[in-house]
Length: 517
Image (cartoon, rainbow, N blue to C red; front, side, top):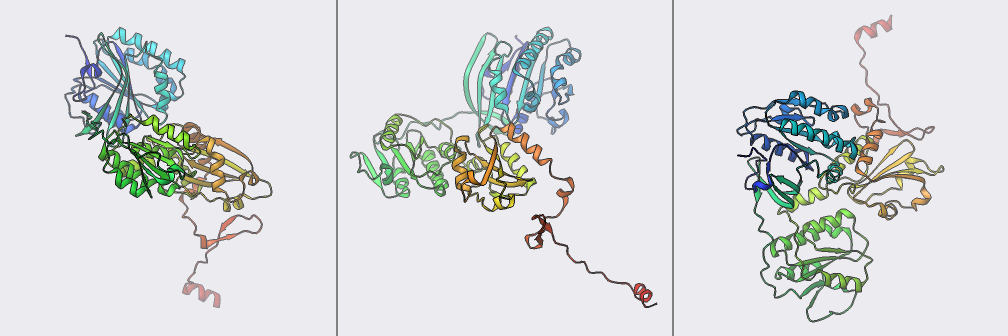
C-alpha cells in the first residue's frame, strides 16, 4: 500500500487531498484564522507529523488540542528572519528522523516577502533534494496581507511543487481553488470547490444554488427604469418601463430570466440598490440578468464591487452612450450568474464597506484606521485605496488647507503631519484621484497645493504608515485628549495649545500661622 497523508477535508475526493512522499505541497490563504484552522485540521488527521511554525508559537497552534488521532508531534519554532528561512534545509536534515514522515511548515507571508523569485526557486530546489533523501512530504501553509504576490510566484514552480492551492473566504463559505495537485500518477489541475465549517472542521459543500431557472418564458423581456433609455420610448413590446427603481424591483420579483435594469443617480442609492439586487439574485436564481446604469458620476470601485457581489451582472458607467449600453444588454443574453452570493447581506456589506469613519482623525487614529483597512482581505489587493500627501502653497498654512477639506464618503480620512496634509481615499483608483480631490476640496486643488506624493500599493501604504506613525511621541499616546473648549491659539506660532486650568489649593492651618508671624 502506498504511503500517503491527507488534508482531512470531509467528502473531498482523494485525488485533491492526498499527499505522497517525496513531495512538496503549498497552500495559501487570505486570512490567518483560516490558515490556522486548516493547519489544525491537517494535524488532527495524521498519526504523527513534524510541526514547524514562525507565524505563531507551535504550542499556540495546538491550543486547544486538535481532536484527532495524532500521537506524536515534534515541534519547532522557526525565527522570523530571512536567514532562518533560507537555511531551514540544514536544520531539517539534522532534525528529521530517517523514516518517512509529514512536515507541516506554518508561515506568514511576511516571511517570504523579502525573498525574490530566484531565491524561492533555489530554496525549493534544496528542499526537494532533502525530501527525496528523507522520503518525506512537506506541506507549507502561508497566509497574510500580500499573499497574492506569493501566489503569482508559485505559478512558475511547477517543477518543484507537487501541488498548490488557495483558500479564499466568501463571507459564509470558502472557495478552495486548486491550481494543480499530484497524487501518484494522477494530476488534477484548475479545480474549485466550496467548503463550509462544522465543529471547527472544513467540509465539502455540494453547491446546488446555480439551479435551473423556474421558467425561460420571459428571457427576452426587459424590465427597466425609464431614465436608463434617456427619454427614448420603449424599444419594443418586450420592454416594460417603470417610473422608479422600487417599481422595477416589485415587477422583477415575478420574473426569472428577464433582464432587469436599475438606474443610479447618486451614491445615496447604493445600499438600497444592493439590497434589491441581493434579494432578487437569491430568490430568482442565476438566469436573471441584473444591470445597473449610472446616470451621474457617483460610483467608486468599492461601490461597483459591492453591486457585483450582491448579484449584478454588469454596472454600466456614466459616460456610456445609449447605443453602447444597448449593445451591452445584447451581450448579456443567455448568460448565467455563476458567482456565489452570500445569504447574509449585512456581513457582505460589512466586509465590502469596512470603514465607518470619515474626515479628520488625529495622527494615531488615522494610522490605525488605514492599517485596519489595508489588512482587510475581502478588498482587492493593491486596490484598497490611495494614500496622498499634499503640501500647501507657501501662502497657505496647513491648518487653513484643512478647513477647505470636506470628505463626504466613509473611508476618506485626513490628518496633518508637519507641513503636509495626508489623505487616505478608500477604494479610489489612481486615475480617479483628480475627480476625488475636486469633490473633497472647496477650491481647485491645483491652486491649494504645490506638490503631492501618492502611494497606491498595499505594502507601500503600510510602509509609509509605519514611518509616519513613528513621528508620534510616546508620551502623547497616554495623554487625555484636550476638548475644543480648552484650546486656544498661540498668536506667535498659530498652533493649537492646551489652556492652563487653574487648580484650587487649600492652605493648611500651620501655613496661615507662619504667615501671621
